[in-house]
Image (cartoon, rainbow, N blue to C red; front, side, top):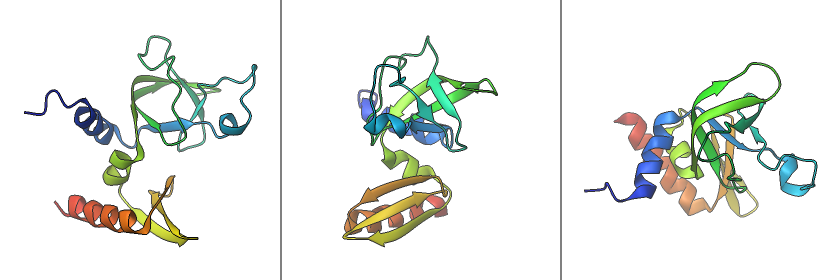
Length: 139
């Protein structure tokens, strides 16, 4: 029934791969220059990473609200290589995390997943996501 719904399939894959997640390295948001790797990613444990050269997402550059989930990471020093990657938004990661905290800040709410990922959203959206997360954890 949902085999043609690629967004749903990608969401399920991302939820299944959590906590194997990375996001665009923060220094790339503001200082895009010729000698910076615009594909550089950061993992929750602070390591720098890139997608594997044979990955479908090797040439893709995630935006500031995008994350990359991965099946395997290779290497232990310097830059890691992420294999079998899927670009996703924050929603599946917020729903798949173990702990979800919310903090009000200046007219919006910050949702913090597992003390690693932070996502800004409206207060009403945060309330709905928190309830949905609790229901999924209870199931």
